Length: 432
Image 1 (spheres, rainbow, N blue to C red):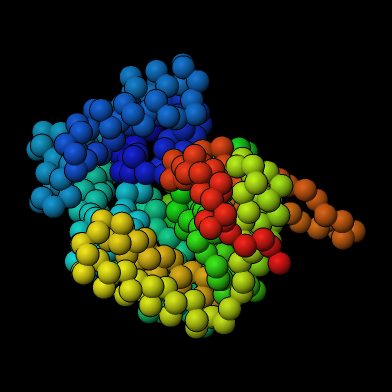
Image 2: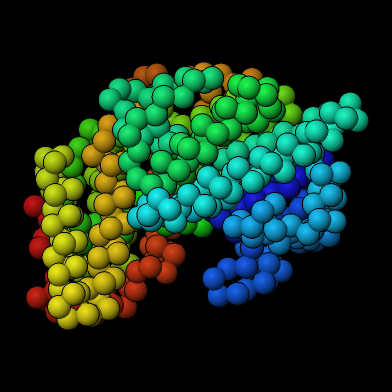
């Protein structure tokens, strides 16, 4: 099968491609890429990604020889694809995987709409050309697989339902969630009106691999773990609320099975832990104990985080951000501007903690069990067996080990932590 893939430089799509290479021996690929802001060519970007894939040398060579790169410009009509190459795509592609998006939570709507909504509209226009050609030839229609997010539902007072073919989102948590909801509405309209073979896939929060704990992106819960480890997160709230985290290798396995088996080709598929999602309290307690026992910085004291009322944490973050904005306006110090950006990003994350997020996933679980070789999502936390005994899964331990092994992907300088630890003034207070 021939795949057109958007998002190979992201965190999830490369893992899906690894699986497609293994599961589909006849796979051929077109990879749509654009130059990065530094002007790096698409060839260089693709080579850098391929070098990081968890493939053996033979699989990596097969991917290289069976791939062709397509340079795109999402701001141009037709994605700026050269007409001859676009005609080739229309003639050859069997399935489109659109997994590209701007996942920043602190961007203005006008900025993030282009990559998250406009891009999806452009991809659909290309898919429509593929479909029209297949209809004319009376050939098997292509499928568009669109990687959305369960958090497109925004603020929801109760358990968030699986309501396909309807979609009734609440107010968005941030501009990212709002634009993903807009793109989903656009594609659902094409399914309803035109019976288009589109499968919208909506994972919840994607974490590291269940097998190794490794991740390509240290976002969301990783940021909270990092701030807690550094002693820069004195407060949390909503300890009974859940963070619905699913491992990236399970997400990729489900999606690649769906794509290669081609039985499930229309609708919405939610990839979630559902009622089994980990609570904020359990994540905090497990991480606090694990970092205390396995810290790579001798003598480093990690302050215990205190739980406060739900309304107070957003207020404290907003107050701190305003304070640093004032300091930056007065002194123009880069450090103050950096802190403002960090707090703005944390503001974007807060609704995932403060707002109650529990996802219904029973219908999707049924579909996963029926149409893939995968079971339910591996849980971040340990589980109890039928006799009430703890079954150690070790997934969370692997995730935590990866954060220390990599310094949160290079975000934490352990040398600076050691130096700060030598100064008693800089030390955190001992745990209560």
